[in-house]
Length: 435
Image 1 (cartoon, one colour):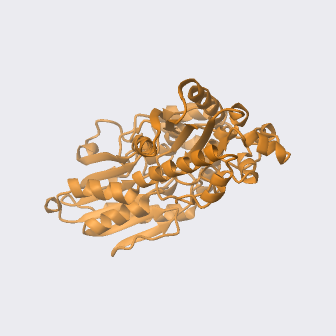
Image 2 (image 1 turned 90 degrees about the horizontal axis):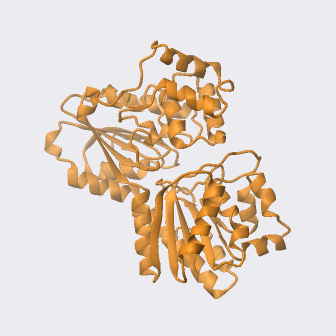
Image 3 (image 1 turned 120 degrees about the vertical axis):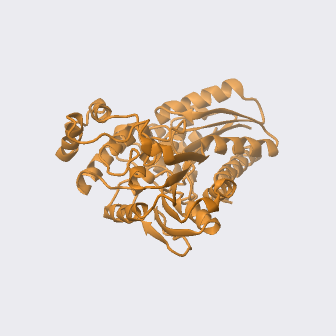
């Protein structure tokens, strides 16, 4: 099974019914990851849509958490003349003329910049009769990094934004306007047709915000970037170089990102090959095979994790009966005020442990990339006995929630979801099972 600690998670159920519910939830979550496997979805699309005779040569750049598997699929199927892959995994693409570089996420480092420069070199080799294949997945905003500001300043800015509670579209609006490659600017560097296969990690699949839209037109502006920093009270906290670049853009001294209607996009095709909807649909099918009545509530959840968690539990109790499952997906946020460890999925579940007391519900929230926040867990699972078990260990969940320390709360209960990096990323999925 996908989960390294599956046996422990199942055994933590206090009775046979709860143990079965936990086991079935893990099976459903495992099926989700399988359904959005980057190799499978990329290979399928390329096999059905690429006509080799149309191009003299095929070049490839791939970046994001799913880049290894996506690039391997393309390399196995197509005669890639040269390619660059930027990943945060300790793996390589096994293919001639395809070079793999390891970068860092979510805070970019010099490794990211050097790898991006190699990718740019490949893009600039493309001629009119060639095809540039761009493989994009979540994490690409950090991994494909060529900033207009010093690296140290970009690191400070990224850290401030991640802790501010800004959502991914706001974060990427700012990234685009401090970059040489985001907001359609990568596409401008190639003189050929471009096909971008995209695994979406953004609610609603807005192509311009996935990995900051390197091959997509951008509807945001320098003014938007400044307003976001003001909104989160960061304008006077960010490095001076950030303010300087944004102010130069506002004065017209720097060109805007590429906008809809730019002729560059006449030769660009952006295609979503996997997303949260695909993941949730696969969860529903698996649940039904296991004998449950299942429904998808939403694939576009946003908001504060702790508030969304309580909302989902209340809705489940209002609408679910025995042997029914509610599935939801999206990406929430956490306003970090404490010094603890965890992520939005763990915090979402932690916020509901008192509500779950004495209810016939098991609740799991799962990051499909296998990494939740600043932890090595993918999420957490809880049921009607979680509060009782935590009190038996002398833990008050309120204290952990206040300190944003959901990781250590669930670690002490052995109820973390541990997978390691899954090699894909279609945001988060929540499963609520009425047992």
